[in-house]
Amino acid sequence: MHNNQVHSEDVTENNESRKWWHRRWIVIVGISLIFLIIIAVILSLLLKFVILAPKESEIFNTTAALPSLTTIVSTPSPPATPTSTLPLSTSTSTLPSSSSTTTQTTATLSPLTTTQATSTSTAPSSTTTTQATPPLPSLATSTIANQQPGWLNTGCLNYARQQHTASVLASGKVLVTGGFNGSPLESAELYDLTTGTWTITDSMNHARCDHTASVLTNGKVLVSGGQDSNARLDSAELYNPLTETWINTGSMNNTRSAHAASILTDGKVLVTGGVRIREDLNGAELYDPSSETWTVTDSMKNARFFHTSSTLRNGKVLVTGGSKINIDVRFIALNSVELYDPLTQTWATIASMNHARSSHMASLLTNGKVLVTGGHNISDALNSAELYDPSTETWTPTGSMNHPRQLHTASLLTNGKVLVTGSNRGDSLNSAELYDPLTETWTFIDSMNHARGAHTASVLTNGNVLHTGGVQRNLVLNTTELYFD
Image 1 (tube, rainbow, N blue to C red):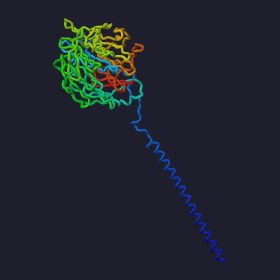
Image 2 (spheres, rainbow, N blue to C red):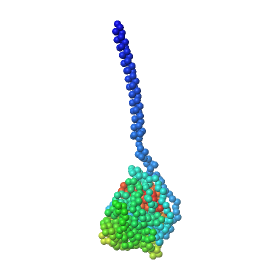
Image 3 (cartoon, rainbow, N blue to C red):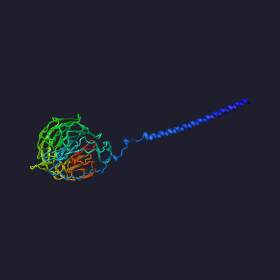
Image 4 (cartoon, rainbow, N blue to C red):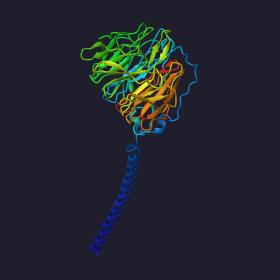
């Protein structure tokens, strides 16, 4: 009896002990579950708001980054430009094989000093003190992908300049040379379209403005003529993009500025016309890159400067308009046109343009025709445009631009349209318009961020158009901007 009672008490104690442990494990499991739930919530919050949160650099507000399509830089109208001064134009030649367009811009010419370069501007005698325009915020060129057509500020030049040249290299970079800002410049700089920045490269051996720059088939850049602070130049030099250095090459047979240069299908460079002190030139000469020498070729029928020169698909060179100095040492605008045949090395006079014009632009279209735009007839800037048909050697008027322009640029876009920008006839324009060869009409597009004339425009390898420098009244610019479509 006693043993049974003891056993019963032991069983009771053991049962009580097991029940207590069971309750403790339930509490432990419950607490663990609560802890795990708290950890899971914390991890989910960290995953959502920290690890997978978008970075600030990945957030791009296109409306804040791109300039307004209605932004217009307006400037008060200055006094009318005296008829005694003449805007100057310069030509930048491109290879004929790649829908080459020989662009020309203008600069002001005084009776004593003449200036001409790939973009142009007022002459040294009319521009006194100049300062670079402060840069606007710029964005990397990659941010313009898939955006609507418009303008975007990019890196500023290291030196403000007008009457300079701009050449697209085989690498895709853009070489800007010389120009004018109080005096002719010898500096050169390179634009990298992948970074949107400018870097200074080796300076030319001679300061010059109103010169020409031609990209040769070997990739080097030939710079010829122009003027320094003292005189017109006959010197020429070569830029090597691989070493980023300049070397002197053979000198031309004549000093000249405000001339034009075109690359022929055989790789030689044809230089035509130009001006010396109180003397216009009808002479022409050929540069041979293989021998680095110049040879005199047949002279044009008419002396001219501030003209255009375009290599046609048939290999001939079309020279149009320009200015001439008459016996009273006054300037007159020309409507005469000539063709150079490289096979016979001779010139032939063909049908004249409908309007006499100087400091105009000529663009070789994808259909083989040549579009001539604007310029001036000494007294007035022109808004007229006309087309040259090589098959008939005739000119026909086409739609007129919405604005009279000189010292402007004209660029053949990848879609076949022509972009015309700026002007500098007393006041600078920031307006831009497009010419459609299919409809032969002009359409206003978004204006540039800066009014400018005597600037350059270069079609980049990505299809965007880089506009550099120029002048806004008497203010020489270091700003640059991109047009993208």
